[in-house]
Image (cartoon, rainbow, N blue to C red):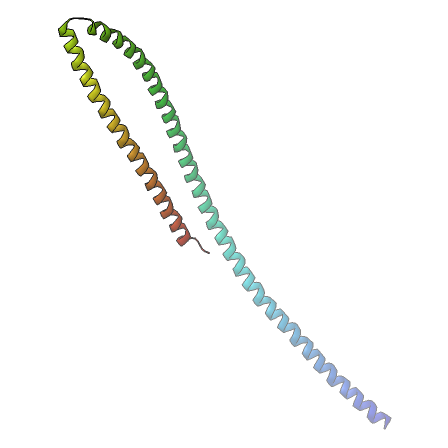
Length: 169
C-alpha cells in the first residue's frame, strides 16, 4: 500500500507539475503578447507625438518669423511717425516766425491807405475761410480716427472669434 500511495503521489505530482508548467508557460506567453501589443501602441503613440511636435515646431517657427516681421514693420512705422512729427514741429516753429513777420506787415497795412486796408480786409476774410476749412478737416479727421478705432476693435473681435473656432478645446 505504501508503494501504491507513493506511486499515486508521484503521479499526482507529475500531473500537477505538468499543469503548473503549462499554466506558467501560458501566463508568460500571455504577458509577452500583451506587452508586445502595448509596446506597439506606445510606439505608434510616440511616433504620433513626435510628428505633432515636428508640426508644432514648424508652426511656431513660422509664427515667430511672422511676428518678427510685424514687429520690424511696427518699429519702422514708429520711426517714420517720429520723423514726421519732428518735421511738423520744425515746420510749426518756422510758420510761427513767418506769422510774426506777417503780423508786422498787417499792422503797417492797417495804418496805411484805403487800398492797403481793403487788401488787408480781403486777406483777413480769406484767412477766416481757411481757418474754418481747417476746423472742418480736424473734425473729419477726428471722426475718421474714431471710426478706425471701432474697426480695429471689431476686427480684433473677429480674429479672436476665429481663434476660438480653430483652436482645439
